[in-house]
Amino acid sequence: MTYNVFKLDNKPKTTTHTGTANMSKTYSTKSNAVRAARNAGLTDYTITTVDGRFAVVTLAPKAIRRISEVPRPCNLVADICRANPGASRKDLLILCDKAGVALNTARTQVSIHRIR
View 1: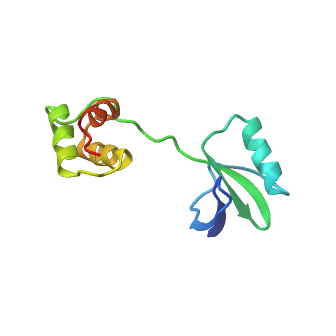
View 2: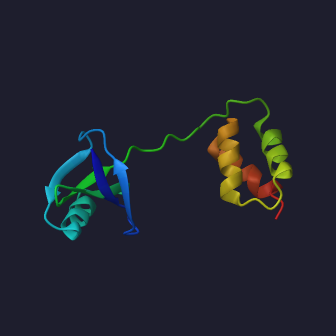
View 3: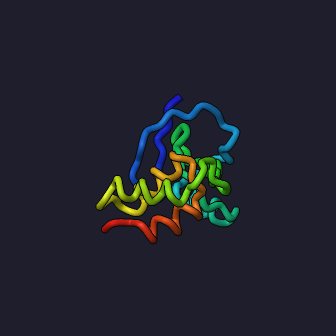
């Protein structure tokens, strides 16, 4: 079943939704759905349309790597930074995460070794 998903920047995006476990009740207007999500204290959510009505879909929290899974992660981050000169900080952090380096280690080491 496809739904029209509205991100927080109000740009519609059509996606396929496989279940309703993370959907709450539906609302008549989009602003009511946004208000209900904010009143519930949600920070990561999207608004979807279901049969002409709006529903709040909560997003699963992203897992953050707390412990590096590779030996000598600081040296690995330095090597990644040297291999990608001119890359943005965000791109370097993504590369470090894919390599198995903990997020906080990657943040501190990228700030030291990044070549601008």
